[in-house]
Image (spheres, rainbow, N blue to C red):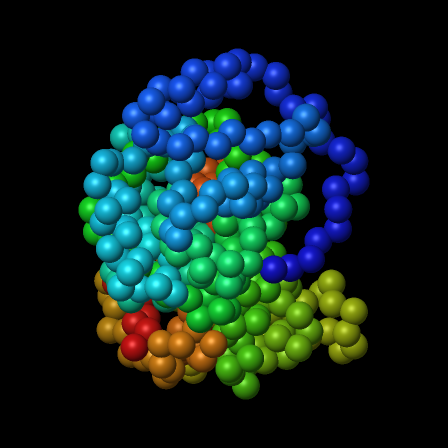
Length: 370
């Protein structure tokens, strides 16, 4: 996990409500049914979601961990089916499909959760949607959780699930989904996920990209000469920027500019990168395309260029996460005002907005990790 500075000041006092009374009431009912209940708490200011999860895990004793957010519900067969999968995949996080409540909330994001193919659970880990199996559906062994490490306890604004997911992948963990809807996933405006800034997610995504994919390449092309492609370029470290040999695009207006100069750079001379037509560009690519209601989708651009994307997306590595070195990486770009849930791709790559994109289109263009 990444170290962070402690918060500048203590958080607000803990909310005092009737939760304790309600929990005590249910404790008796559950224990009368033979279900052991452990209640924990503290009187200090709120310490965040990561702290709460770590405390719950420390207070439990089972060999497997099944996560469930307090505002969600799960189907009766969830534990049995995910436990069976965890036995078969002991070094994996096991997720499941979800049913969204209300039904039409974050509709495209929900489709993305439910429709990813098994190989895409790894190849789309860099997208703005974050973990390819959402944290409220996680199930894993206690031994594997202890191997990966605890959740980050940085408090409000820290994407503790994303950071744990990245560490899980660094340690060689797998991602498996039970393809049944076993979880009722409720959406509401007071969810903790809304406290996490898009810029925070972006920074973690770019860092993970630079750590896991870019070291495999001596040079690469950024697919998008517009705002998002330039944002990625500026977000990279100097060492990674020096590997960028070109931008490429389908927009003739951008291509006619011929070059992008990073005017805010402290380097002298200022870095200038050529802008090419995508057919003249060479892989690997980091593809930064926002697919949500974009002109690309409306014009059928993806459909017309499907064969090109598939050719440039040829995989060149094995399935070990430590060896990720794809020819195309897809980083789906999120609309900041409609960020779906907490949560940031290989040798051609795309930053695209999965929260707003049509997932069926994104998946067709995604590289396969063999």
